[in-house]
Amino acid sequence: MKILFDYQIFLLQKYGGISSYYLKLISELIKQEHNTKIITPLYISNVLNKLKNKNIVIGKKINKIPRFTTKIITRFNDLFFEYYIQKFKPQIVHYTYYNKIFNFSNTKKIITVYDLIHEKLYNKKNVKKKSLNIADHAICISKNTQNELIDHYKIKKNKTSVIYLASKFEYNKDDLPINKYDPYLLFVGERFGYKNFENFIKSISRSRLLKNKIKIICFGTFPFTDKELALFKSEKINLENINFMTGDDNLLKDLYLNSTALIYPSLYEGFGLPIIEAMSLGCPVACSNTSSMTEVGGDAVNYFNPNDIDNMTSSIEEVVFSTEKRNILIEKGFLQNKKFSWNRCAIETLKAYNSVF
Image 1 (cartoon, rainbow, N blue to C red):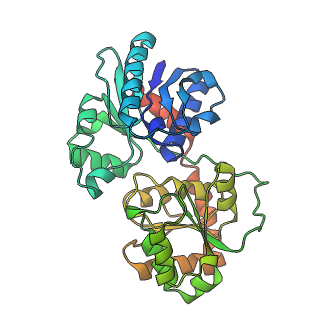
Image 2: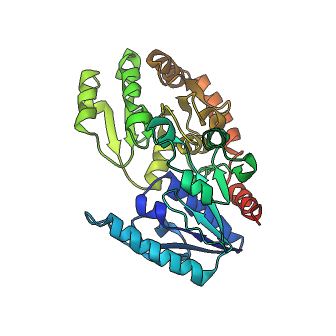
Image 3: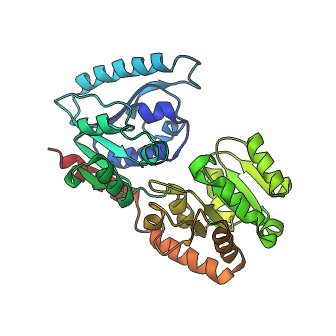
């Protein structure tokens, strides 16, 4: 099958879970000998460098988007992408984001819907409507996202499918914790708004044991802001006990392996990749009981109400101070992780492609 992926997410993200999803999916499609290309004339993504076959990517990496040039670069990418669709004549065009879908009649158009964050939290009620009307099929990364999509946009269920993501990490018997860090809780990803970082910090502050006996490592893209530093001060969090780290997947894997637990207090997620990444590496998880997170975590997670700080504190304390609880979560986490694989993701994606013919 001839399959094209567009440039959108690779121009938006240098790193990120969505970009990693496409890297893994495309790698699996190539293994199955499908003629696959990524048409991204100009892009900033560092993820594409990990593709073993560099001929898959048609485009040039730039370090950053110069100021005031976003519209120009986007228009250039659009023109080149239109040209390549007509030249390559793919059977499937898989769009990586919802900003634009070209309505060529001789190709089938697929879009992946990750969540309805813009609709639910930012009052952008119809932000995906135009793309969904043009697309032949919408892949949803959780049943929760599928249900919300059908309810919000009134799409027929047979025009959608649920295809789960998976961890980019694999646990090997040689992957043993090396104890080079003091005991710490791990927070992965962005920290703004619905990620609920402020309530997480407050939950630690309310526990004398947590505040004094365990550190926090935040892995992400951006260092702590002045507002966050002020939050630490107001909650009496010792700055020596909370650290920001950034780096590649090797560092992130190391942090999962050595962490006492991953804490994931988000108010809303379309999937929640850090949950499955942590479980795949034997890292216990305490996370919110909202949206897709219970679907992904199953019975392998210690859940809490993300709006109830005391409940969050109790859940974290249980994971931190009960060796028995941690061991149970680790064992269940490995079992839960087996439900998700990139090979299965690719097989189900091909089924979705074939359903539109």
